[in-house]
Image (cartoon, rainbow, N blue to C red; front, top):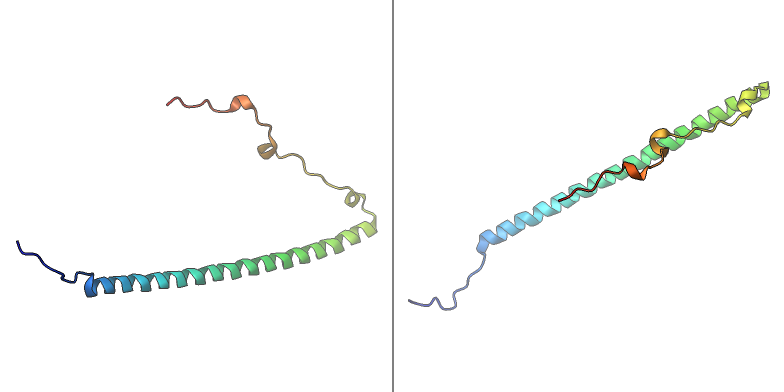
Length: 104
């Protein structure tokens, strides 16, 4: 059996090409992700500004109409409406209604 001696062994040109393709793919993916996240942040900011503008316009319109009604002497507008409890959310939790533990 002959020994190979100190022959250089490495990935060669195909290893370099594979690594280069992976690096370029990663760079393109990160670039695409950043652009999508930036676009989403701009959309959220614009939607929040639109909602704030719409809420401000609605509250200004309702304040004007409320002032007009109160000037007419509508007693129903003086009453504050308090919402009742939501049974689906505010139901008390009964400790006996918990499921039994599984015996594995």
